[in-house]
Every structure is written in structure tokens, then in C-alpha cells.
Amino acid sequence: MSRHRLLLYSVLILLPLTACNKQEQTAPETATPKQPMVDTITVSHQHVADQLMLPARITANPTDIVHVYPLISGRVLSLRVLPGQELKKGQQIGTLQSSDAAQARSDFEKAKIEATRADLQLSRAKELLQHEVMAQRDYDDLKALDDSDHAELERARQALRLLGFSENDTSDIVPITSPISGVVLDVNTGPGELQRSLDNANAIATIADIDTVWIMGDLYPRDQAGVHVGQPVNISVNGYPDMTLHGVIGNISDAVDPTSLTLKVRVVLPNPGHKLKPQMYATIAVTNQKRDVIVVPSTAVIQSGQETFVFVQTSPGKYERRNVVLGAIHEKSDEITQGLNDGDQIVSTGAELLRESEGQ
Image (cartoon, rainbow, N blue to C red; front, side):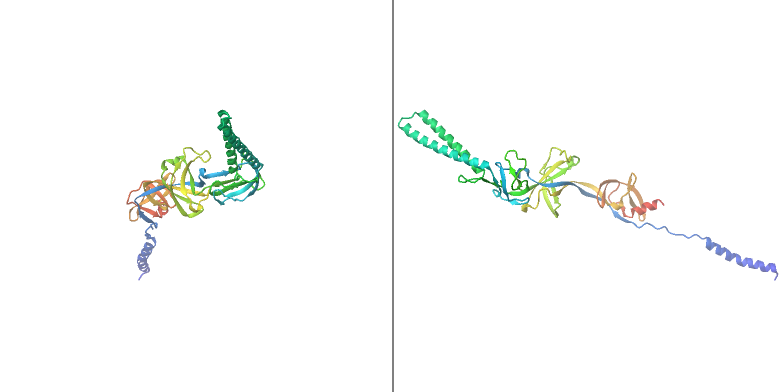
């Protein structure tokens, strides 16, 4: 066989192998794009109640608070009372030594002598009148004088009783007593201090009856439309995290507080055992009228610039972006007021992955 013929046979044999190898190298690989892993939920309208939280403090009823001032001037000898102490009405809380007490006792003794003398004069005048030795007019003058002396005696007796003395006492020590049953809020003096009855600026002690207490909440004027007198509220107290109290709004102030720029909301509560202490912090939860909205998880809502949207599933594996209008925003959920309908299936988890896949 000639050399040219051998070369031709070699080329014919190698051509199919080369074409096959080239086809294998240039054939493109077909890969199915991966879908992001997402979870969906079906949404529907719900009745959601607004809850307004008002910061508050516990206070005593101002009409049940008494500031104990000395009835007369003197020096404090003893004081047996401490803040937080429970007192009974009439219980002695201290003593005061006063020269005014001696003066009050002297006035009483003088009035008693004058009344006794007036009685004797009137008795003699009555005998003279019966024997027609004294004129009726003179007798009437003595009777008026006797009445006046007895009135002065009664005034002096009441002054002693007001100071806590009996008629037979001779001491100048004045007891200081509690005028009401309650708890001591504050003590503003101590043994040895001089107390003045008229120009004293500080009370010896402040006592409050806290069998009932006021919960005073701060309400901003912008929120007053949803709050009214007689509305039920729940109250939580910082000192008792597991306790929820129930009451109704008793009053809303007509004037804005110039310091806090709020209206004062008052709730009156019974206080058995005096667990609620004045100046404790509390919170008043006011439940307003229910609203009809769609509530979705916060992870379903995407905000981009001025747009707020969710992804709605149109068919298995197919999603479309839909703009929505947000209502109230909570810790783990958002309210949708426009943009969604009952029965819509939205992406609850993985919405950010769909957003990223849109940009590819």
C-alpha cells in the first residue's frame, strides 16, 4: 500500500474521535437555580385592642394626711416615732416642755376662783332679792357677771384639755399625740429642738391614713381621647412584679401640670395590709377600643427607603412584592392596615433572601 493511502486512512480514523472529544468539552452544563428557603403563613383580620401605658406613682389621699404641729411653743423633750411606723389615733409620739402650759394652768385656776366668787355673790343677792332689800336690776347684773365668769372658766378648761392636761395636773410637760390612725411619712424634728406654735415652718411629723391610696398617672393631652372616667384599668406596681391590681379611673384633671405637661389620672384602690406605700412607682394600663387589622411577624415586613412591603406567594415557588401600610409596631409583630387581604399567603421567614434574589 502506498504511503499516501496510509496517511488518508489515519486521518479518516482520527476525525470521529476528535469531533466526539470536542463535543464533550464544549457541551454546557445545565444547573437548576436554587430557590431561597422561606416559610409562609396565611393572614387574616384580627381584633386588636390598643393599650396605653401611663407612668404613675402611689400617693396618700391629701385629705387623709395630717401635719402635726405643736399646739404651744416649747422645747421637744422626747420623740418616740420613726418614718414608716404605724400609729393609732391618740397615741403619744413625744413630749414638749412649755412655759405656755404653766400660763394656761394659771388662767384656769384664776377663772375657777372668779367663778366661785361670782357664785357666792349671786347666792347672797338672791336672799336680798327675796327680802326685797335688793333691786331686781342689781340682781340681774350680778347674774350676768356670774354667767360671764363661768363662761371664762369653761374656756380655760377647754384650753387645758386641748393641750392634753387634766384639771388636776400641775406639770408643764405637754404630750404630743397622733390625731389620726395611720403611718408616719416624715419626721422633721428631734429632742432638744425649739418648736413655735405660730411661726413654725416644719411639722413635728407627717402622718397619713393609707387604708386607701391614690394611683396618680400622667396622661399626655394627645392621648386623652381614648381615656375617660369610669374606664377599667389594670395597675402594676414596681415593688410587686407578679401582682396586677384592677380599678377604674375616678378622675382626670382639668388642668395640665406645668412641670410634666400632663393631665393627672386618678385611680383609688383599697390597701389592705398597707402593701402599697406612698411614692412607689406604678403603671396604669388603659385598654382602648379594639381595632380590625392584620397582624404579621416583624420578620415578614421589609422597609427600603420610603417603601414598606411584604412578599406574597402567588403560586408554589412564586412570590411577588406587595406594598403595605403599617399600623402599630410591637416587639415581635407589626400591624398592617392596608395592602393585604384575608387568605393571602405571605413569607414570614426568609423575606430578606427573596429581596436579595430579586437584585441578582
